[in-house]
Amino acid sequence: MTAAPAPQDVPGAAPQIAGLWRRLFALSIDGLILALVGGCLGLVLSDYLSRVGGWGWTIGFAIVVIYFGVLNSGTGGGQTIGKRLARIRVVGSDGKELSLDKSLARAAVLWIPYFLSGAPLELVLPMWFAGILTYLMFGVGLSIVYLFIFNRKTRQSLHDQLVGSYVVMADSVMAPGAGTLWRGHYAVILAIMILAVAVPLAVRQLGQSELYSSLLASQQVITKEPAVEYARINVQTDINIEDGKRRSRRLVLVRVVLSSKATDVEALANKVARLVLNTSPEGGKHGRDRGAGLVWI
Figure 1 (spheres, rainbow, N blue to C red):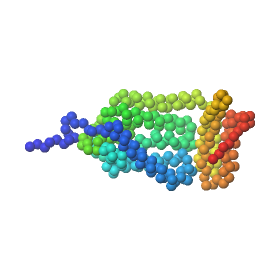
Figure 2 (cartoon, helix red, strand yellow):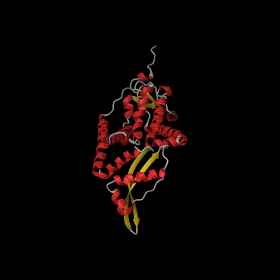
Figure 3 (cartoon, one colour):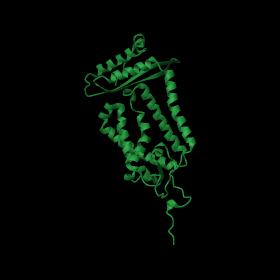
Figure 4 (cartoon, rainbow, N blue to C red):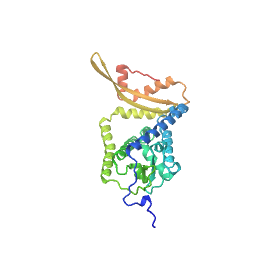
């Protein structure tokens, strides 16, 4: 008698690729768990997180990458808590669980576009480079979502393509195989990346003004103050309707996180306000002609 072929050797057999909704369910469960962890850390480390400001994203990024990287590897059986509940797991093209380094790389590629969007890169990198990097990461994030939804054959996204991983049913014994991505997907991804950089740059160029450049310079100067840990400046337009007339005003919002060296907070707030008004091409004019108001918290 001859032995029956192993399940992965059965001619015409197909791996049980996990469906979109199961993966979304697993991701939702994992998201809730990480949100609870983040909330607890926020309560415990609130003072520290307020001081580091936008750089707090590095802490969250590390926690998320470790969570997904370790549990989705062979160390965690290829399953996060969400995947265990959804009865799915992460494997390589040979059907075996991923090594820890591959799983960590997979998690980093998946989550860095999200976390990098909150980093104040313009404070440590040239403005043009920080902008392009941010737009590229946005394009990577869109490409991940696109493949996650439309690559229905293997459900592999960029992070899976990078390390050759698949998400399959937990009880699947079929090796997924190498798998090939439809060439049309490459064209769509290329278009997404180009548009993600070109459109914001074009809009930014159209809207580029002396005001924006001066406020960025002010932000960098404020950050160099000994008592300042972090600063970010945003401009928004406030629209009100009074007596049937539409009125608008430009608000310059300055968020400053102080260090333990700060003593006279009110004096520092006034100094920051004067700096912004003096460096803005419109700030001085509006401050003199219309009166400048300062509100600080």
